[in-house]
Image 1 (cartoon, rainbow, N blue to C red):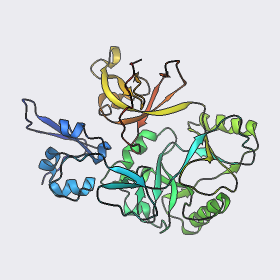
Image 2: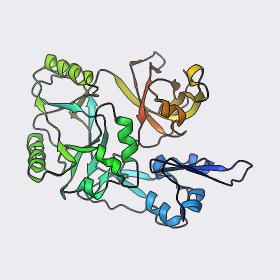
Image 3: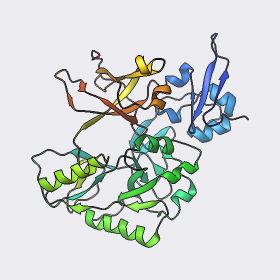
Image 4: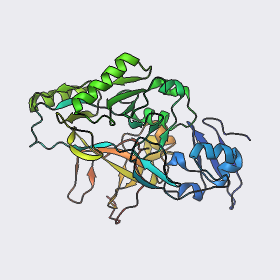
Length: 362
């Protein structure tokens, strides 16, 4: 059957007077129909009867992983921890890999002797020995040449396109056509989860593997001992001055454990959070006729607008309602509203959420 060209769109007749618009944006397919818009799954994993009508069931099943040829929109899948490196899962269940997650650094914690590295502004990726998976357990469709020479044991790392290129990295890894755009990325490895050993042995194992095997698109992330708070702040200023996101600190001798741990700390000058897009605010002045700001909602129901940090292209084609975005801010107001929020990009590895309560818009 016919496909939709990258960057193109087609119209199909809907139930009302207006047709539905189907698009292909970088290998991510969308439809303007309510059935597509209202699904609580990542946008690259949504489908509908109109997309199946144009592309065919076989192409859509291959793209979103549906097993039944007549499937249309599906509800959100349950996410449970991945118990091993296996990619197998129960029907209708996405298994999330057992990743080590960080806490934020508090000033009263002495980090002297901890292992310090740059916090990469990319997309977290878990290599299970066969395929890449996101934090939520969704597969990344990397080309075979990108994964060439990667091992049959698990690796934890980041798909990284360079500093200040987060959104471009996201647009590449969310593609499902295994395109040559992956040549812009590297898999930067910072741990070996399957090795039951202290961190120093795990990172040495990663370094040795990369140097001996030389996978073409993989590299290991260097670490250095932190010499104290002054050293930490100098390095943080250097990294942020280069456009980096911040620093990560690992406790000496620590083991790899699934879940959030105080053995791994992140250090940044700014705060960040995730929010769900609930609306689009039209622009004025130079932005007239396109997006002025995103109306977003936090998990606690707090609503506010994010109008800075958006590129011209993002204002022309803003993130769809229901999309999870990342934003940065300076602090929270007394009412719990982020002050001076700035858009960072679409978050493809975040679980969809419904607010626990609805609060006033700021």
